[in-house]
Each structure stands twice: as structure tokens, then as C-alpha cells.
Amino acid sequence: MKEYDVIVVGAGLAGSSAAKAAAERGTRTILLEEDTQIGLPQHCSGLLHGTKSGIGNEILATMDKRVVLGEVKVRRIFSPSGRTLDIPLEGKGVWHIDRGLFDMQLAAQAANAGAEIMVNTRVTSLLMHRETIVGVTTNSRAMPEIHGKVVIAADGIRSIMKGIPRWVGLVEPNVEVWSTINWWLANVKDVEPGVLEHH
Image (cartoon, rainbow, N blue to C red; front, top):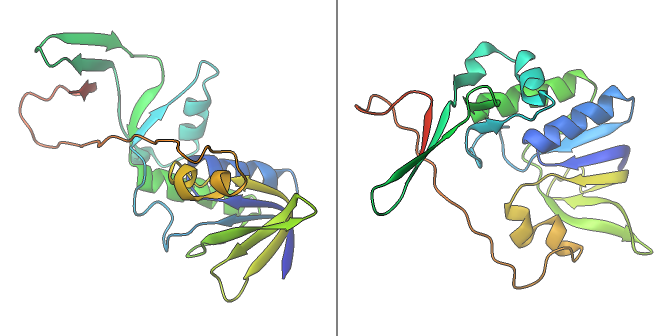
């Protein structure tokens, strides 16, 4: 059994950012990813929204330029009647990104900051002591139990249905989760660059 200051579950944007920040502050940090490769399969769209503080620009400045596929300049909404509504986004920090490459590079930054990373490691339950979370159990034969002072659940939207938030009672039993499908089109006529279409 190994002990850490911080256990982060999920190596997406939130998880890798949390692991990087924790490791940079000198904590013993481990980042657990259930898939065999960080960034694949892609569970989330390749759309990155920045903030007024410019954090999106800060993150992207640390990455390979190939991560950014383009800036989104307009959000175009098509109604069933055929009418459209354009919402200007230029300069507001919205980008199409290669989400797989983005996640891999962010996890690498966490590792470079000192976080340990384990892939193909699914968290199966929380370890409790007197109603306090003290770690996690995993499907790993090498590390079936990992103890830590802090557990950060960054395991994505699917966790609402069957992950840590549900295990600790943060989600109502009958909550519904809705999702959408995003399509990236290439070499299609009449698709305007920089326009994000919603149909």
C-alpha cells in the first residue's frame, strides 16, 4: 500500500491540471487514469473555452502549436424553421483543439512537475475510516489500495452516473444526464472556418 498527499482520479483537463498544481506545490501526487492511454478514447469534445482571466491562453501557450486546430469566431445556431442566429465569439477565447493531444501534453506537464501517473487503473471504490475518505481501491494488482490525504474526483460526466459523486451520495438516485454528439467535418463544401454550428 502506498500513501500520497493527493490522489487525482481522471487524467482529463481537470484531473491533469489538479495533479500538476498539486505536484508543483511539493505534494506527493498520483494521477489515476482508467484507460490504457491518456487522451484516447476521446470522451469530450475538442472545444476549449477560455475565461476573462485568459487562462485558456496561458494553458495553450505551454503546448505544441498542433494542439490548436482553429479559433472559433462565431457560434451559429440553426432552428428547425431554418432561421439562424449568430453569436460572435472572436477574441473571447474559444478554440477547436485536438483533445487527445491536449490531454497527453497536460498529463506530461503533471508528470514533469512530479506527479506519478498510472494508466489502465480504474478506481473501484473509496476507502473510508470513520466517515472520512482516506483513499481509493483500484483494479490494479500492483496497487489495489492507495491511501491519501485528499482525493480529487475528476473522472468526468460519466462519474455522475456510476462514479465517485454517486458513491458518496452527492447525486440524487434519479438524476438524468443528457449528452450530445459532436461531429468534426473535413473537406466539406460550404462549411465556414471558425464557425461552430448547432443544428
